[in-house]
Length: 387
Ligand SMILES: [Cu+2]
Image (cartoon, rainbow, N blue to C red):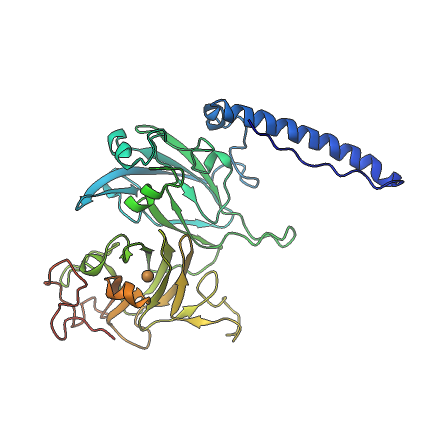
């Protein structure tokens, strides 16, 4: 088996002052080499159970003495989309969806999330690309701090076999001018990293992903948050065309396939890219500041150095977010939200932000009696307001 070690630099000749710290340093390095060798031996000898027990790694990141709150998250199988297996995360098994629940944290906060894997071994086996790959689901997060035991990977032993549970700890490290930490405020996401193969490609493709918003104390809160995930095969939240927008004109239910708000409400978007394709996210009628919060900082003068945009490139793994005031200056209506790569939007990568009248009624021009397939372009004149 292979092992690595740190290369020790010899002290410069005649440097007496440096010799003592260097001796100390080299003994520390020797210890590191020993620790690394022990670790590699354990992992190499099937020591994943030892790694899983957390014996070798800190359970929580520095700065998180103990979790401020805990959450339960369930991974479940959802009804298939045609022949496609669909999985989702949910705060309860009954409310699982794709994307999963948008999780909110505040800088300085540490959250313990217990993931319950209710996806059957049979389903996970169907998604497996290599029969030697273990069966399980996991929770891997972007942007916030976590230790190896919360990495959500097979290699670190931090996944959940069918029927089992595991607690992951996330720390929304705060900004610290002394240490130079930029903090973790911003728009991130979480996803499976285990289903099917070592990168969770099948888990992501089946629906195991969701948005994460980290705010600073005092940040403005929106009235509604929508997570919009751009993926392969011209998909938005794994759907396209009419299936991406199932908003009922009479009794709309806000959700992953019904982006809706009253005029004047603050609407927040968490935008995530998954899969293999590049995209550009475009929202009609609204624009936002291209900053980590999608806002111009409170109290700061509007500065030309902060771009105001209504279209933003999005690659796999990227995420960003922003808040807009629904219908601000432009009024209620059916505002398109789509990928601006033309063959993607033409292929059905398009949905709507429905901005309701202030009394909550749907403005004219929304009609969903057309079949839930294709691009939705079959609606008659006046049925969609394609601005
Ligand atoms: Cu696209």
